[in-house]
Length: 191
Image 1 (cartoon, helix red, strand yellow):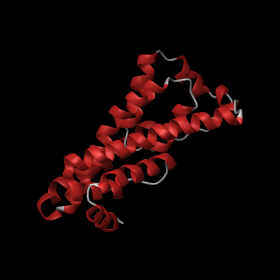
Image 2 (tube, rainbow, N blue to C red):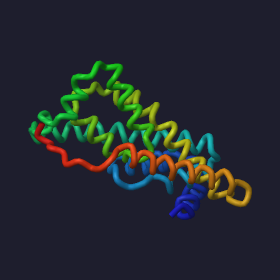
Image 3 (spheres, one colour):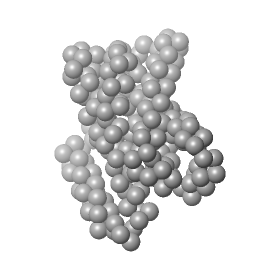
Image 4 (tube, one colour):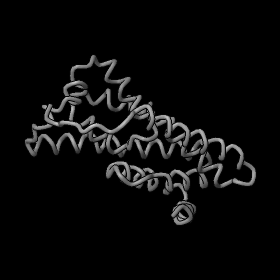
């Protein structure tokens, strides 16, 4: 998949920047496909810095579109049941600064899918500017991590040690996160 996008981006020249942003935006709009192949292709074609900026712009565009379309869809469909959910109440009652920090934290957490964050935020009364600022800030570490891993995989001969350390740290982090969370408890969504 990465080689397909590398070939396309190389063939299309600078138009490929717009195509990459649109494809990455579409992936983030849908919300459940990983964008790591596009990020890796961006890194290969334009290098880590420009490739990272292109990936970030695409993810921002997709997340913003998802937030506004989900929110519009919920409003047009007249859905109200989610207003009774405990976590929606909790987010809606938070001061704006705490909403911003909570959303940034969700974006920082590598195990929380982007589409889930987009959908969850759209169900709250959180102002759009909080969502956009938190997403812009929170996407930086996740894209940086994707770029680091992609770059190290591409240049594995020179960077195998750093790649190994990165993967071990991520694995340990995931394991700790699962242990700290404890056993899954059934949740009652109505209260």
